[in-house]
Length: 196
Image 1 (tube, helix red, strand yellow):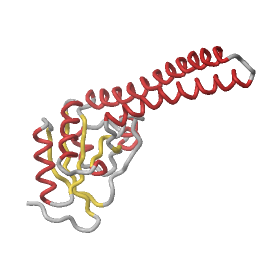
Image 2: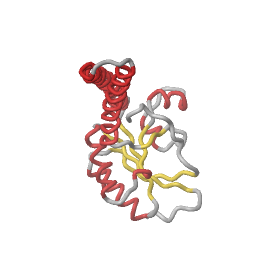
Image 3: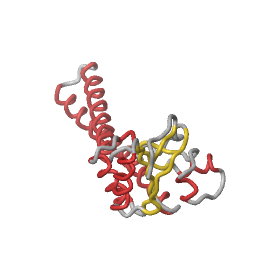
């Protein structure tokens, strides 16, 4: 039976997942059962891991290592919002800037409207391309983790009840190698791909 953590001790439930859908299901249930988004962390990029670990590694070696690079959880909704923002911001800025330039040169209203529409469309296409890069980086990161052995998820626990709930949730979503560990100090947070 777990005890209350001592001062400076961090307790976490950890699990290894074989699919992005199973990982997302576990995250959704953790969040809906009272865990905070800040309590969740995911494995950092393969490049960040290689820089820290410096050799070939097994996922089991990373699970309990406090030096393992981690990243914060970013929801698919937030990624979608970022992608939409890229598209709309570039379309808006392109259209307004073009309309303003045509208006300053004394162009007719019809040319202002047509120019703004064309420039806005071009800006939107550029934004869509950037959004695809953001989504592609997220997909590539997930794919590389799956090829290297799986997706790791840590859930910070604050008491024995949190530990039981977290382990149960991880187990319901096909996680393997589920356990609770403790470590002193904060885990190392590393940047992920922009949309991970």
